[in-house]
Each structure stands twice: as C-alpha cells, then as structure tokens.
Length: 266
Ligand SMILES: C[S@@+](CC[C@H](N)C(=O)[O-])C[C@H]1O[C@@H](n2cnc3c(N)ncnc32)[C@H](O)[C@@H]1O
Image (cartoon, rainbow, N blue to C red):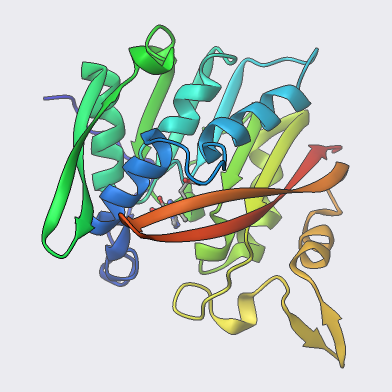
C-alpha cells in the first residue's frame, strides 16, 4: 500500500473532520467521481477539463513547470494540468477523495457507483487511458491536508488553482492574504467560485462579499479584488463557467462558477 503523506501537522482536528464529513461520504464520492470522470450533461462541458484549459491557456508562452491545485477532490483537474506542467501537486482535506485520486493514478482506473432512483444504483468505471491522461499521470502528487495550514515548502508554483474552494473555507480572507507566497512573481492564481456562502462553512463575518457594507452592496468579486490588490493584478475579465452535479438519474444541480485570473506582481 502506498505511503500516505500529509501537508499539515493537524488536519484531523475533530471540528474540521465533522465539518467536512460530507466530502468523505458515499454521496460526495459518487457526485465528484461523476462530475470529474462521468459524461457531460445537458451540453455542459466537464468542469475540471475546462478549468484546466483556461488555466494553461492563460500561461501560454510562460513557464509551466509546476502547478498547485487546492481542493483537488478526486483528481481530474490535476491529471489534466499534468498534460501541460512538469509537476502538479493536488491537495484536499478529504482523505477519501485523495485515496480515490491515488488509486486512479496507481491503477489507471477505478469503479464508482451512482444513485439512480430509490435504492437502485449504476456501476461506472474511470479509465485514465481513455481520457488520454495516463501518460502524464505520474507527474501528480496527491496530498491530504488543510489548505489553511500548508507548510512553507509549498511555494514557487507557476500556477495556483482554487476551484470551487473559497466558499468552503472558514477564513477565505486569511487564505487569500497568504496565497502569493505559494507563487513565483509573475505566476498565475486562478480562482473559480459560485460564491455560494454558507454560514456552516464560512462564518458570516468571513464572507468576502454578498452583503451590504454601510448600506452599499459588496460583491464577492469586489471582496476578492480588495484582498488580492496588494500582490496581484487581475488578468482579463471574469468568466462564468457552468458545472453540473448529478444527484440521481433525474435530479441535477446546475451551477455557475465565476472564474478570475490574477498575476502575482510582487
Ligand atoms: C466544492 S468541492 C470542489 C472540488 C473541486 N475543486 C472541483 O471543482 O470539482 C470543495 C473541495 O475542497 C475541499 N476542501 C474544502 N476545504 C478544504 C480545506 N480547508 N483544505 C483542503 N481541502 C478543502 C473539499 O474536500 C472538496 O474536495
């Protein structure tokens, strides 16, 4: 069995484990295996593939040595990034997600189940070779840990990606205040988020936007800009990228994530 490495001293604090129990559940495993490796739905492109393409295209002609994918879930985006980067590090708090990503990397395939209706479910298989991802899969290192307390050695990346992560953090402002330390100067930070703020994950006082300040509405994009202004310049316009999470054969969640690109300036 592969040796397990972790990236923080205490990722298993009981409160955090309870908070993120969902991401270790059978339900989440089905939903994220399907979202990452299952068929496209309703004409919406696979989100991990699209976000990896947006990220790599923005670095066209620039160094693409290493990428850090924070909240990598079951691994698809990291495998996609590995077709362009020499090294990719994928980090997620869910030990179950990381086990699945490592299993796919080691064996090139895995099986998962999706709920159909009632107690009926269907069997599915992921095969990296079928997705043209097998040859570069060994460039990825998957680590279980809390992105809020990554060791300082996780630095000097050309790309840092946080896809659908910030609205699941307890302190997204603190996370953003230190994120430049992970990048080389000139490197790219890609943030994708539906800004689906929920008090159970992010206490109301820690939201980046989506509320009134002194009677004036503050959007999450404005909040992001304020938090990142010191070390980053925004690149291009925000993009709205859809993704679909399948619950059962006939119940789906259709979401839109706002994708913003930020270049580290100092
Ligand atoms: C909404 S999912 C998005 C997964 C993936 N980025 C995607 O777009 O499909 C949020 C992910 O972030 C992970 N996560 C949430 N908080 C985290 C933290 N503090 N440290 C590491 N991972 C975290 C969860 O386990 C989950 O896999």
